[in-house]
Length: 394
Image (cartoon, rainbow, N blue to C red; front, side, top):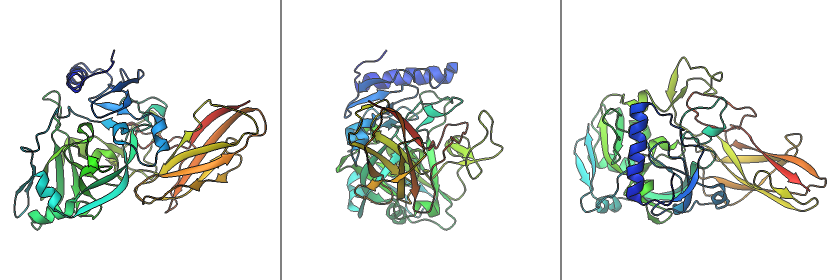
């Protein structure tokens, strides 16, 4: 159905698919099984999901790198993204419950003190394709994530420049993306004022030392490290301070999880109460060897992967090569900070032929780890079951 597309072709096609889905009730995962490799402007070959505007998945091979290249970072939009942005005309507006409304140019934003750090960006639905029973939505495997060095102005400096009036409660964020049909709510997210004023939250204008790519949120996007990407509003254009709690669709209805300690319910059921999804759970992924690899007996095999948590860093990763009977401590690579992922490594010399199951389990600095069994929720969020990779020793 799809080959190489221009950006304009993509925008047009994505709009048709989204409009048809909204009007006719087409399942979100209608084309998810195709996952054809396509290339868009500023991107390398990525896997196309096509269920909503711009869902492009990163192939596992790119996770061998500590920092994900800009051209390989996954893409996820809920709405139709802008086709172009003229920086001479673009402004970031700050309004609402503030002392001074502002319209900031890129030059204005870059005059503010800059902050930079590495942080994992991950879609809430990363791993959704692994849930049983299956769940509608983008059928991501492990590729809706990436580790990037972000640079930008602190959100709190922008808000303090505008001056928060007493009684400020929430801050909302809107971008240049727009719904494909009028009946779909605009994609607006919010943070409580206390959260918005945290030092680490930035309005980023660079990724890995370069301007943001169009598909990853040019000219600026919000970065909320440790939280899922739904809050990382792309192509940010409006910041509004409210003196009441924001009750928009994408906070009060969408992107919510069961309100209980496991954020889970019995498969196929609905939770009695929900809360907004926020902090990422602890997760590890085996990058190599890949599933169903053929390995020679008595050869040294490098098992490697990545692990990350919602801002608490990773304390240890345990690796098993016998389906969980015994476990070994993995060695870590370079540490880029608590919001980054860490690469881990373990050498294994299989002596006997046969089929082996490799497992990896990460634990963060406050003791949160990964479950052996999948924890189900009706949106397919926060997948972090211990991964099992089968390989053949010959």
